[in-house]
Structures are given as structure tokens and as C-alpha cells.
Length: 358
Image (tube, rainbow, N blue to C red; front, side, top):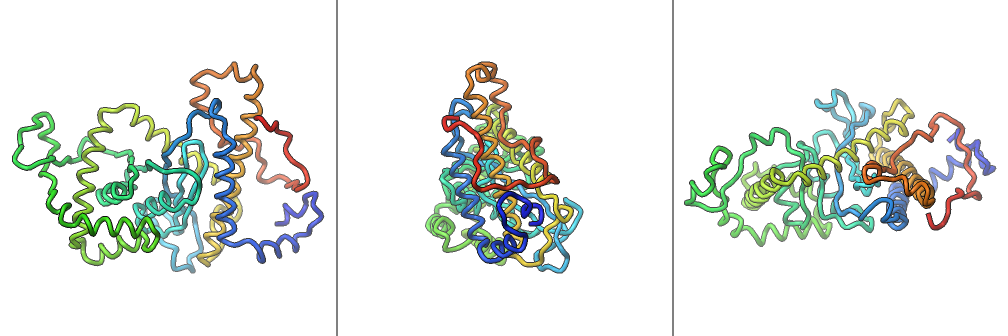
């Protein structure tokens, strides 16, 4: 607040703090982030960025948080206490969804919630995740909801596949070491109507994915609908693994998408530098607001960078220097021109000198 109050707008630090308390809420910040994402999708030029994508990459970032918080937990992978921020980032570095989850929360549920309820104009047809973001129940739920789960699976050489039908143990002789039992299609058929009901509840928002998975876990995974979803997931996972192993382009696509979300996390560390990068609040709504403000700031950076790159490449001389390799490496997520510790010169009456046709 103190740095921004030094801008060319005539408002004091107290004025800015009042506006923040009075008008800035979680809903307002989420609407701002959604509007920036939609504006970025609308302004992109196909000849610069290529065809639009219908897939997003999702991953979590660990943020330190105060111990006096019921959501703060120790995370063994990150070796510290805090919360997880789960991001959904599309292939051109624009975040379409963010959420605060505890370290023990289901990343499958977070992935589904973000893909279904991001609120932007993007149609999500595929979701890239790393190994820890995929599971058989994840494959089953995403199949019912109509989008593809596209994981990068570690140790794929030990993944077990399922036979499509019973009574054909020698139908695939080269896959015998990887094949296990047949898919139990009868279980899927018996519970199909119930699975559709649960999927409809998730899609319509009458029930969250986390609540449904928690209900299944409470039943010790013996719930018949849960077993049917897992069985459906095994069939879908077998199809995906077979496709993944033979399609090098798919492997590159998944790896590229996950690299984008890793770059997004790298940008977070540069921009979110206050309080040592920790979330300095014990209130859940304040944590969510901090994350949404970070998303707004970084999304605005991507939006401005998109316009700047298009402005440069509107010049035929610069555009003619771009090769196919250069276009593949082009990204709007860069921050070398940002001085996070410098003076903030904010003037709401002045616009960037970017060409309208950029």
C-alpha cells in the first residue's frame, strides 16, 4: 500500500487501505481475474500465438502459512508447514482458476473443481497433471464429466493394464507381462445410473467433488458406485497408457503443458515476495483473497506482455525474423522488465502506448 500510494493519483495510503477493506472481496478479485483471462483470450492473434488450446495444466504450489490456523498442515514433500495453492494454467500461461487447499486435500478433487468451475470463456477438454495428480478414480470421474485426464506418469514401465474381455488370456501376447485381470463391465453397468447422478451433481454444483470422494472414503472404498467409478477409471487408464506409449506428440504435448505451469510457479516466487513469500493471515477468506490478488497481478502481467509481444511482431521486419522454433518458444510469461522492489508509478489516466491492431 505504501509503495502504491506514491503513484501519480493523489490518494494516500489510508485511502487505499479503506478501498481495500470496503470494496475488495474474494468475489470481486475472482471476477477481476476471470475478466482479465477472457480479455487475453479475445486479444490474442492467431498468427503470433498459434491456434487456441482446449487443455489446461494443473499443479499445486506450497505456500508457508502461520501455524495458528486449522488449514495449516505439515507437507512431507515440501518439508514445511503451510497450505497448497492449486492452479489451472492454459498453454499460453494464463491462469483460469486457483484455489486454496490443505496439504492433505485430494488433488483429484481440486483438479476436477478447477476444470469444471473456472468461470472463463475457455472450454476445457483436457487436463495435464503430474504423476501425483492422477489416479484410477480420477480417470473415472473425468471420463464421466466429458474431459480427458492427461497425466505424465512416472515409472510407466510398471503400470498394469487391464484386459478388455474375459476368456482371452492370450489375445495380446506381447502385453502379457503388463496385463492383469479383465475389466468388470458388469459392475459398471449395474452402477451406471448412479455414476451419472454423481457426475451430474458435480457438473451442476449441487455437490463438490471433495464431498463425494470423502463420502466414498468414509465407506472404506466399499461403496458400489465408487467401485464402479474405479473400474471405469481402470478401463480409461488402460486406453490412455496405450495411446501415450505410441504417440510421441502426446508425450511432448503433456510435457510442454506441465512446463508452463512450472514457469507460472516460478513467476509466483518473484511477484509474491512480501512476508518472505508466506501467507500472513490465519483467516481462510484472507488467504483466498491473497491468492486471488496474486493471480490478478500475474494474469495482468501476462495480458500486458501479450499486447507488447503482438505490438513488436506487428512490424513486418520483426515478424519476418521469427522461425518456427522461435514461435514454439514464444511465451507471454516473462518478468525481466518488472522491478518488484522499485517505486510503483500508478496513473489511472494514462494508457500504454500499444497499437490497437497489435
